[in-house]
Amino acid sequence: MQLWEVMTGEGKVRGVKEDGYTVFKGIPYARPPVGEYRFRPPAPPFVREGVLEADHFRDAAFQEAPEEGTFYEKEFNRDDRFRVGTSEDCLYLNIWTPAESEEDNLPVAFWIHGGGFSHGNGSEMEFDGREYCRRNVILVSIQYRLGVFGFLAHPWLCGENERGVSGNYGILDQIAALRWVVGNIRAFGGDPENITVFGQSAGSISVQTLISTELTENWIKKAIFQSAGGYDTGLNLAVPAREAMETGVKFAARCHASSVRELRSLPPQVLLRNQEEMAAESDGLSLIFMPNIDGYVLEDGYMELASHGKIKDIPYMAGCTRNDIFVTEEMLAAGDRGQLYRGCGEWCLLLERLGRAPAYIYYFTRQLPGDDAGAFHSSELWYMFGTLDRCWRPMTEADHELSSRMLDCWTNFIKYGNPNGKDLGQWETYTKENPYVQILDLR
Image: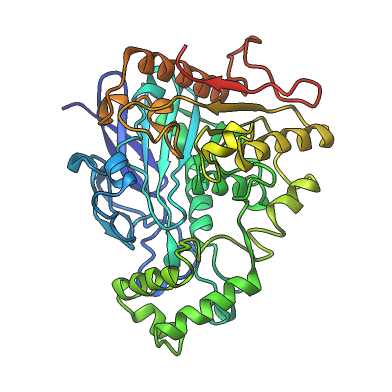
């Protein structure tokens, strides 16, 4: 087994060379958020002596295990080879790089997983960086705190914070991971001046958060929204701080905690159980803990910030799937592609009104083989990561060809801000005069 050692700001890490690339798994980008660090912003990682063996994925954020036999458990969690444990000690990232030295200066793709801000991890079986490396792009995937651990807001927590805010720890984790990448990716052969942030579902909401906050400075050069981000999509979710704290007060009460100290002393299993029970009592709504408008991470709601141009002036790509959230066959039959689809177009038109560069839109319509789920929410992940061989579905040669085309488009955008590559091609931008949408399906 060949190894590659890289020096980071905290010490050396040793990755494993694969066929044409090196993968570094489980690099800490912040201190473990346990004990006194629970419900606090992420702290800088410890400086290490010796070499960190970055040869295995680390635990996912603490969360409820997917229920066996459910749709997404079968789709993305059925293979024991890709399963990891869960822990509050979860602030790690993974890097796939084709570089041979830090002089290569390659573009960087920064991936944020979805899961409703309560589930998911950065090493799910559908994620992999091999195909990105084959196209000379470095892929970084991250983990961040979820649920109550990542988004609990409470007056007690505001009282101990120097800015008087609370919650949004999961977003602050993402910002810390991005800061780490900016400061260290050159050692892995990456270009810190060419970072694209992309994500799907809650990961896409996270991307919209990162391009809407001043805390990310000028680190993000391009962004991709997949099935969430945009304008008035129905998933532009950020609650007022007051509402987030009301939820937090109710949560602390049901945990019988009378102080921050007691909340921090409770076993994580107790917090998770109360979170799941509280979600079940809210008509099954799992998004009881999510980003809040705290005046620090988010100065206002997503649509308000976008309307006033308080978003990064960078190239954007956005899209959704045919059978995505909020979409029924009856709607499709009536010519209605749903709120997520409309929200992507509205985002493009907003950029046009702001005088910004026009954006690209995709619409993934491949009806996946094996059942009647169609082009369901998350279905494009198999294709844009090139991991069809891991999927249980009877994929065809045409599916692999579609995956290759999508990988070319995604990595072209990451390199150049244009899914066609350096030159103009068939995928046009979406404007009022030319509302072009790229259909992604079998030829």
